[in-house]
Amino acid sequence: MRMFSMTAFVVVTVLVALECTVSFAQDEIAQTNGYSSIRLLPGYHHHVVGTFDGAAGTIGNEKGFVLRYDIGCGGGNYVRNAKQQERTIWVKEQILGDMRIESALVAESDSEPRRLLVTLAAAAADRTKPGCGGLKTTPGGSGPFPANFSVAVKGEEDIVDAMLMIMTYRQVGEPPPVLIRF
Image 1: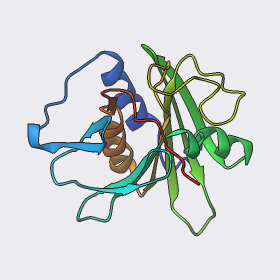
Image 2: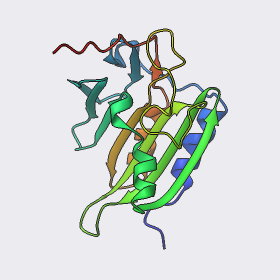
Image 3: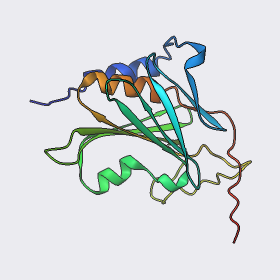
Image 4: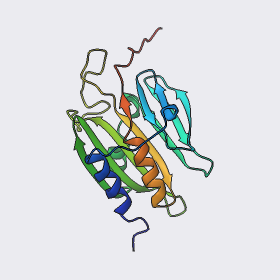
């Protein structure tokens, strides 16, 4: 018997595909960096951590739920990496508009909780190429940058909460160019 049924995942995906609206308070929109945002469910908080090539951070609540994200080419593709390491319990992929959604449930080990991994990337990206899939992602490029999400799941409710927030992720513009000075 499966510990996690696909029911929760399918329900969330269908709701998003049908473009159902989930009502969030306006003050629950978290800026992940200067060019993207995600809507938080009530009771969740957001913490940003800067990275060299994008943005990273966590979204959590008082119950111990911690959704980690990494936005930018340096993060690669969490789902593809898990598939290559053969750690996946299941993998699902869907294209909605110009966004490719890849998701996987992975088992790190028998003693660790299972993790939900989600990678959002441009549908036009060549999945055989590393990083941003060969897309030009500088200002004026064909973005969007890939966004990776990871959360330890203790039950179906964690999957639903994660997907409800992840599917609100939006890039609101092009990221600034990365300046490297030596």
